[in-house]
Image 1 (tube, helix red, strand yellow):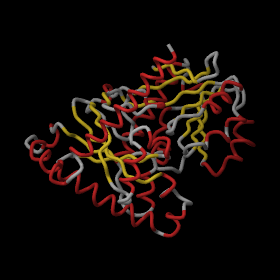
Image 2: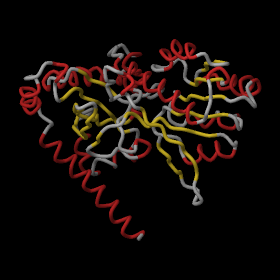
Image 3: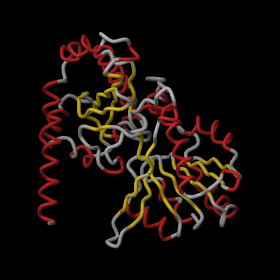
Image 4: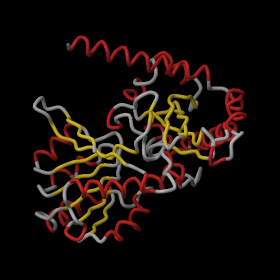
Length: 344
């Protein structure tokens, strides 16, 4: 059975990579974008079949290998920061075309050499110009970007798009409600601690969360972990508390030694918490949930914590927000010490 499973996974992995190759040759050139645009623009903007284009990047080589053959990735890398098609989403009866830049997060994140010497700004400005032209050619009313791209571009003055922020904020607020419902918590008897309050999404959440009427509300940033360790974990110990993580990959780990059994960690960051981080939560007697995203159809599964759902920053909410269903997942460890996902 294990051999069959491994063989099946290997076949699926190759099919995904072959599918991306086909997408590349079918949909990488301006004339192809314009041809699709001729059809898409026949509808009014609000009814166009292709509603949005979405730009992603590989966090590292591991994630890149999920979609690209190594030889193909090297070939694409010859043209720095190239934009290539990699996936197709379907949500709210509309399509979202997914593209990827051939650059890793480490090439433009704050603190990197490229960020310090201005190369990241120059490259991202070029990406923004080319991606904007791509959107115009296709006739998509909306364009969004994944991960830290929107916040980095805002900081560098490259772009000031708020669409990712608005959608993600709605999704996080709904995820808070769902998590509290699953844990039978009421706002008046529950505290909430937001880690990453000065970030792209965190700033807007600071305006909305107090309206929910939580018993206690604390907002800290990634560089003020000492406050969580020395004050918050002491003052709130023993009380039911939602700990909302909005920081970046790997940052959650430094807070987990100080959580308490009544804590419920809600993670918005991708990649999802590691097995080690889940084990730390379990050891503390607490619980952890991951925000998976809105329901939808995905051509090539993103893997990891997405479970064939749409990333929050890629989605577009329906007119009636009651119809905007957000999936969260409880993360636990099974008897083999592997992550067990339970979707809600």
